[in-house]
Structures are given as C-alpha cells and as structure tokens.
Length: 543
Image 1 (cartoon, helix red, strand yellow):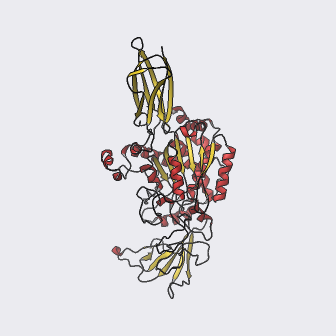
Image 2: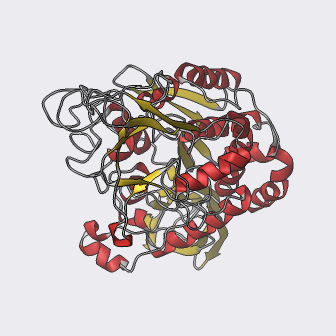
Image 3: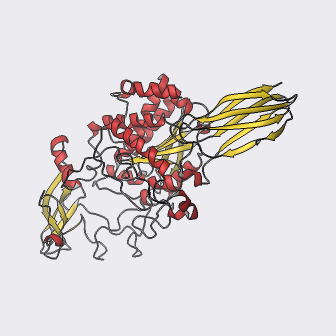
C-alpha cells in the first residue's frame, strides 16, 4: 500500500487537475442529481451500486452510491456526505463531483488499486427538501426539511412564511426606521446593517427582520414558514431540546434516521468526510484538557477531540490547506445536534468537515463586508440588492426598505468556479484516502521445539497513517475491534497464547507481536483485523 500511496502523491497533479467531468459546472436540482447518479451507476455497474436509503417528507429520494471493487463492505470504507445544510448547495456538487471523478478515473492504475483496498460511500444530498429551496421562486435560504412543524409552538403550522414584498424574486431582509431600533448602518459599508454597540456610544436607528409580514400577528416575523427540521440540528450529540429547528427529539426525521441507519449498517467505515458549515480541515480541532481516564468516568464529559485524534486532524488540515491553497478559515461553527460532531463523538469514527470553499474575512471587517469586497473584484454578477422602500401593512407611516445580500451567494460560488473547487476537494480526498488503515501479517516464524511441539510467532502491522480506529472510537460499542485467530483443519492444542484474541487498536505504522505454543501438526492459518481496517490471512504447515 505504501508504494501506491507514493505513486498517488507523485501523480495527483498530473492525473486530476483540469479534468472536466460531465455534469459538473452547474448546480443540479433533485431530478438532475438523481439522473447523474443513475447514469454513473449504469456506466460503471461493476464498481458502483445505487441505493435509495430513505425518502423525505415530500417524497424525494435520499440516495447513496457505493464505489469499490470486490467485497465492498468487507474492507475499510470512507463515507462522504453532502447536503447537510440547506444553505450549502456547493456541498452537494462536491460530493457528486467526487463520485464522478472516482468512477471516471477508475481505469487509472493508481485509482483502481485504491478501490481494491478501499470503499467509498457517497450521499450527495442528505436533506433534499432543504436543498430544493435553491430552485424555488422566490429564492430564499431554507435550512429545514418538508415536515410541517409548529416552529413557534402556537398550535398552528407553517402559518407565518416569508414574503417577497418588492417582487424581485428574492427573499432578503427588511429594515424599519425607528428610534427604538437596535441596528445601525455599518460605518465601514453603509449597505450593510449591524447591531449598535452602546458601549461605544452607538444608538440604534433601525429594526431588521427577514422579508415578510407578521401573518399570525404575534409580533414576530416569518418564524413559522414551510417545514421543518434542520438535518444539521437533529443529531444526538449536544442535541438541544426545544431548540430552533431541532425537531421533537434527536434523530426524529426521515433524513437523519436514513443517514444514521446507513452508516451504522456499515461497520467498515472508518472515517466520515462531510461538507457544510462545520470546519476542522481549514482549521483543525485542538484537543481539550480532559484526559481519557476522566472521560471513562462519564461519557458526557468528552466534548473535545482526544489527543491522538487531534494529531491526525492537524496532519489532514495541513494537507487540505496545501492541496486547496485555501487560507483564512472561518473556523468551526458550533451548532447543537450537528452531523459532523455526532459522527465523531457518537458514531465513533474519524470525522472531518469543511465548507469546501470560503471567502477569507479581512481584519476589521465583518464576513459580509469581506464578501462584498471580494465579490466586487472576483464575481461577475450582482450579489447585493439595493435598498428599496416598500409600503408595509405592519408599519404604517414608517420607512420600510427591503434589500441586502442575495440568498446563497456567500456560501455558493458562481457555477464557473465549480470545476476548480470540486477538483481541489477531490484531490485532497484522494490524498486522505491513501492514508487509510491497513493491517497486514508479517514475519511469520515457526520453530519446532520437540516432536509435536511448535512455537509460532507473527507480527500484526498497520501500514496506514490512520489508526485502525479513532482514539475516541475505542470507547464506542459500534466499532469493530480487531480479531486475531489461529485455526487448523487438524486437531491441535494451544499451550500458550489464545485461539481467538480480541485486540486493541493499532496506531498508524504500529506493530504488535503474537506467539503461540502448539501441540499438533497439519495445515494452519492465522487471520487478523476487522472490516474497518482490513483483514489479512496467512497459511503455513507444521510437519
């Protein structure tokens, strides 16, 4: 495997940079995305399988495509998840693009060798109902699924949605001029609004709400629109009871249940890569002060990455920045019940996430100001809607203006940039995949001590950089520990050693020796490993 890794690292720039695959360079709606997945599965039937793992409340399919050569579920696997946040349409395109590139490059010797060793499970869109908002009119960012929900708990459902007050086809924000307001125009860019800072002598002049009216007359605006529950707030780690868009309980939704069940059904998955607002690749997690011994006393105490997992996170972060040339990560967006942390803390796998693309926030500017500055230089389209005065039934006699940054543009680049972004993230993913755990049995020795007495010894080695499971995964009952077993078709007795031994994780490039004293003759075999780190087997004879 190490030779394959070296070949891949050397040839990555030659193999993958600049290759344009069919279907890229655009944002796909649900039908287009599903057709692309079906086309890929039909084009590469021997190494790919499509499965509908669930349906949303509105009836849309949640599809997983599995990619690999023989025995796909019996070798180490990587899960790649897009669509976990409705604002990040880019995540779907990256996940889909990775599937396309893996399959379209599968005849390449290096990629074929990788697929012989490793399996990929790709879910391009985990929450299709939320993603669908990108293709609706008027255009608005929607994080939630299609499950009708009483978000404001007033015993009415979906009764207070946003409205397009100025008829421009976009749902942005509205500002109401009022001396009791808490917002001011940003002095650094008066197109934008920000909260007044009374500690700096500022007093508010405006109220700011999302664009719409107070349909249910409760004094709030657009707090109970179409749907729903946010996929990225509905997982069990740090789940917030009664939280905004969190659902009635953790993993209550069809989407979260489908994805969680699919992942739990695949014990061979050792790492999960997701694309969305959480980021520990542009900026790695730092291990907390808590020790593992403290964590054993109460699993609830473990809320930061464990030290050994943090070392690998730092390595992958360095590779991500080197491969993509992205700098100035916005950092980790902490949300209750998010998918990325669930995959590490509760699912027990290595878990990495990135937006896949971002705009660096300039010192002294807000992220909105930095984006507008970037857009003026680099994006050849209008991203800001100028403020326009409207008559508002809830604010008679007051100045009400509608405008702001267009929906989605801060997190989703123009379509002409997609090919390059997908390629960068794909190249990183291949580099990371080449570091996968792989156990192998080495240095078999047999020594005859007496007539029917033999000493047998062997070394179990992890040739990967990833450990056979994460440090946190050791504490998780859903992980498969390695099994070392010696067997024979003939009768034999073991005087020293165990016929079957369940053994702890091996770190990257770590080895462990095993030996047995055996009475008996015949043909023997030793097998070792687990599906999440590979299984090796050797045979020998004692005569």
